[in-house]
Every structure is written in structure tokens, then in C-alpha cells.
Length: 339
Image (cartoon, one colour):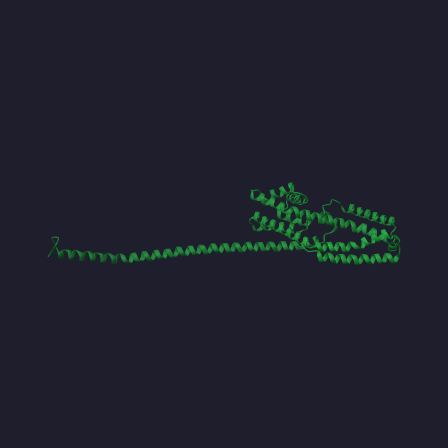
């Protein structure tokens, strides 16, 4: 029996021979193929483990850096808080010399005391000429020498702080724009020291002068709180201090600070508007006694002069002034809100 002229037995023999050779070759190379497959799997597992280890190492490094930065910021805040507590002892109730500087006056203490004595003499002479009695003249001298000058210094000090708060957010915005345009922080501070309105210009000029003497910028900014004891100046110094120690986006931090300062100002204005009615009532109540006294003097001078020419009248005036002062102080505390 043949197939295409070839005996079938011959074809079967060749098929069996090919199958045998294939089986032998498979038996020889099977172990090698299996070993290569296992090696490939092990290599892939090693690469995967290496990649996972790298990812875990990178994540651990990022976590460690984050923890270090948080710890550094926390230590910086604790250090600033401790330094602020030490400074608050001298700034919340500063001595008279510091108050004069904070008011923007260039008087030395000798000149101030001479002006205070002159003010006391003027008040005493006016009282003596008005004929209010010899017992009231020393009181007028005391008020003119110790009360009025310090009240003037306090008034100028508060007015200067208010002017600083009105201009300070604009100055911070200028510094933010300068930093975003590529200028360093020191150039932005010098720009404010040369171009801003008073008293912001004077305070930033002190920072520039301190930098020229070798004082670091954060320390120079912290010193501004000594001459301008308001929380806003302290906020600015803290932002600069933390940025210098821990890094970060300074323009974004100062921009957020500017928004906070404007929000605080709006809140203060809102509180002032809401308490204006109570302040007006307190002012009217406090002004009634002197107004009534003046009207009685204009209509019946002999009747009202008994208060100023007799010891009993002077005693009544003194007690009345004390009670009026207590009432005004209580009303002021009731309508005075800190923001």
C-alpha cells in the first residue's frame, strides 16, 4: 500500500522517528526552559520588591521631612511665643520714655518734664486767676503737670497706631508684588521704607537701618513690635521668622496675612459702628453735669458760685468728680471691645 508513490510503512517510520526526536529534544530542553521561566519570575519579583522598597523609602523620607519641618515650625513658634511673653512685660505697660517714642515724638525726658512743669504752672495760674480757691490750685497744677502731658502722649500714640494700621496692609501688598516680580524680600522692605506713608515708612526704615548694622531680617522685623506694639506688627514678624527658618512660599504667606489684617480692620469698624450708640449715650451722660453747671452759672452765678467759694462746695465737687470718673470708667469698659 502506497501514498503518493511512497509506501505507508516508510511514512509511519519517519513519523515515529520525528516524534521520538521531538520527545528527546523536549526532555533535554524542558528543565532549561523551566529554569529560565523561574529565573524570570524571580527577577520580576526582585524588581517589584525593589520598586516597592524604593516607594516605601521615598514615602518614609517624605514623611520624615514633613515631620522635621513640622517640628521645626513648632519649635520656632514656641521660641517666638516665649520671646513675645518676655517682650510683653515691657510693651503692654511701657515706660514713659518708650511711650514718647511710640507716639512719634523726638523729645528727651528732660524736655518732657520741663514742658510738663510749664503746663502745670499754666493750669494753676488759670485757676488762680479764675478765683476757684487756693485749695483747687494744687489740684490744677497736679493735673496740668502729670495728667494732661501723659494724656497727650497717649492720644498721639493711639493716633499713630491707627495710622499705621490703615497703611500697613497696603505696604504688605506692595512687598507681595515685589516678591512675585522676582525681587528679594530686602528690596521690598527698602521700597516701603522709601515710598510708603508715615508712620509705616519710619518703622520700615528702622528695619533697613538694623539690617545695615548686621541684624538679620527676622530679628529686625521683630524689633518693630517694640516701637509699634500692635498684634499686626507681631504677625508680620512671625511670618518672616517662620519663613526664614522653615521655608515656604513667602508671597503666599504675606498675601494671606494682608487678607487677615484687612478682615481684622473690617471687624473693628463693624464693632465700632455697633457700639457707637452706647458711646454716644455715655458721652451725653458724662457731659450733662458740666453743661448743667455752666447753664446754672449763666443764669444764677451767685447760686452756683457757692460750690467754688466754700469748703463744703469744694468737697462736694471733689466727691462728684470721683463718682463721675468711676461711672465714666465703668461705661467705657462696657462699650470697649478688643478685636
